[in-house]
Length: 176
Ligand SMILES: Cc1cc2nc3c(=O)[nH]c(=O)nc-3n(C[C@H](O)[C@H](O)[C@H](O)COP(=O)(O)O)c2cc1C
Image (cartoon, rainbow, N blue to C red; front, side):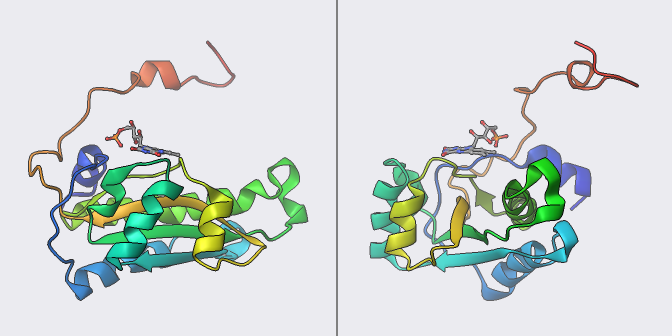
């Protein structure tokens, strides 16, 4: 699939078929997260793959009641270890969040290329999930995403709900 087509047609998918994801497909998608760039190549991430139905249902409460997250065959919890990185200047500990976000973006785009849906979940109870999934103290949850085949096979199309290019680009100095 053409790279720009992947980027244009990735959408947040909030309704999934129960169909399982073939292991080779899952591996390719996860591998895309693995090879993402990170500051100083720290790779602070860990991805928890949840397939267990009961566990997925329990996660709904920890994601502010977002029921659809449990409808996909897989729920991925993207975590990052807080490395106190003193060369990060003002970015400091945010560097870990940036690193994990890049890896999750790799994952969501690869998923799209495989015909799989994802939905970035940013509304969640970090402490609650940490307790539930035995995540260590110095690790935090950055994002979650369900992963599965969309129920609506027409969902992958370009959105118009974006600012215009002229609104987000300026030249030589800040304008606007
Ligand atoms: C950081 C972040 C947090 C988000 N949190 C949620 C969420 O908790 N629940 C949800 O349904 N969608 C969530 N979204 C998805 C956005 O609503 C969605 O990406 C946006 O509306 C654009 O739609 P699109 O992904 O289909 O292009 C989140 C997206 C991002 C990037």
